[in-house]
Amino acid sequence: MRSIFTTLTLLLSSFYLTSQVLEEVNEPYNIKSILFKGPTEDQFPIIKLGDPIYLEFDDLLANEQDYYYKITHCDYNWEKSDLLKSQYLKGIDNQRITNYENSYSTLQPYSNYQLTIPNDYVKLKVSGNHILEVYNSNNEIQFSRRFVVYQDLVTIGATIKRSRDFNFLNEKQVVQFSINTSNYSVINPKKEVKVTILQNYHWPTAINNIAPQFTLGSQLVYKYDKETSFYGGNEFYNFDTKDLRAPTSAISKISLTDLYNHYLFSNVYRNNREYGYYPDINGDYVIRTLQGTDSSREAEYTKVHFSLPYKEELALDDVYIYGKHNNYVLNENNIMTYNENNGMMEATLTLKQGFYNYKYVIKRKDDSIELNTISGNFHTTENNYTILVYYRLFGNLYDSIIGIGSVNSRNISN
Image (cartoon, rainbow, N blue to C red; front, top):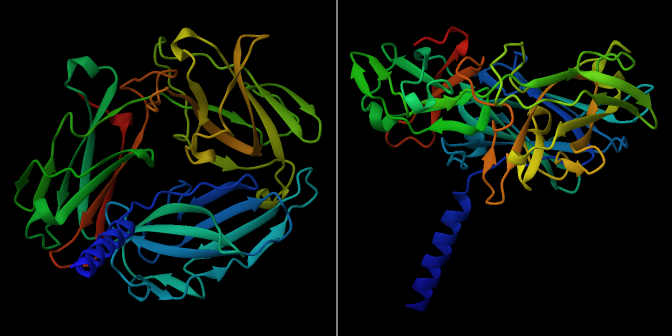
């Protein structure tokens, strides 16, 4: 009896271990400027099966270390799927990244690594959620990033509506959409089809597990209000360091020590101001330099100095600088500290030359995260929404992605 109980315990333990959600691993201090994208400039690869994905990153140790990559296929919930590697990959992963070069005439030396998939060693065979992991020569994971592969089998039509909830009339945006399955056989849509909605490719605020509200012929209709609503947020703050020596509307002064120092103008709170539109790239960033022709190897690293006036709504809680440049992580590298001499919250980040979007977020003592307390929420904010349609027929081993839809809130309507 004891041996049976022990066996069951081990089986259950094994089940729970293999059913864990695979979260992204964030990079150590020496890895910087991770660019991960598909054929477009958006830095979250959502690619059609067969299209390439591109990875680029810098190692500030600049000693030409060996790095290796692995690919894991996941189900809808980002848990490892039941597929064998041979079922989702053609070829072999765990290959060394061989395309790398050292920086050229920069104050901060670094090695720049680049990887393209598919390549001579590996190709993707199926759609669905994937994770790319990068390891060092000691088989220690350095970082990982999610990416999504889809097939174009269904069509999605979507619109953005203003919330009908009077409490959020001026703050929320509602995504309403329909899925046309006329060219793809779906027998039981409520069980076979799952949907994820992303705002600006930001997974922490993704909406999941939405069943169709009703079916109209070959269309699955999702005309919810509360269930598919997002806070509008505000346009991101931004700055551009492509020219090392030129102040801009965002940069107040520049100095040179061991690296260039760019001091940004202090940002203002926008939660109690009227909405004002100015173009952003929805939290993303672009590496670029005017001091060379190859941004990958000739762009400098600079120390960017941020400041925000302290106000009572911050209380004694933590404030972070938040954006795609640090993969929206909250840690000691982007936390702000209070300067008693000038009453400012301040932080300094070492960033590669380029155009950056960022915002300030608050982490309260109860670990809750307030994304928009400082910038405010407005229903008129420009946001991009992506709809991912997953499909799993009963008995299948994995969740495929049979279509994607995209809509922007510029054309929001009542």
